[in-house]
Amino acid sequence: MSVRRLVLDVDKTVNEPDLIHLALVIEAVSGVKAVNIAVTEIDIETVGTNVTVEGDDIDVDELTRAITHTGAVVHSIDEVVAGAYMLENKPRSR
Image (cartoon, rainbow, N blue to C red):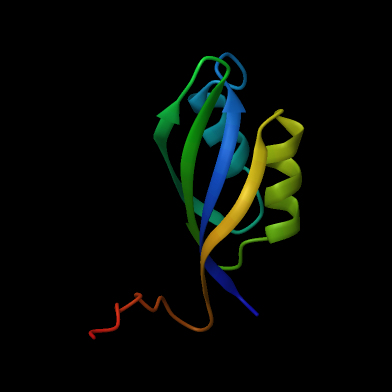
């Protein structure tokens, strides 16, 4: 299975790693072509982020190890796109 996009819920401490360092570490993972990190919440000790990663064949295990190695924590994988091409999520109408 070729993973093309992941959206992760990642928490980090306020001070370490800084967002630039985290982005550079993620970008160095096999298969990663682009990364977007958006801060979603901040409290006294932690920063919550949504991390979107796109590429051709992302090594998911290497990605989670790389993030963890910086001191950040992957709480969940919130979106996965896999296969021969990028498929956008289309919300169901009710």
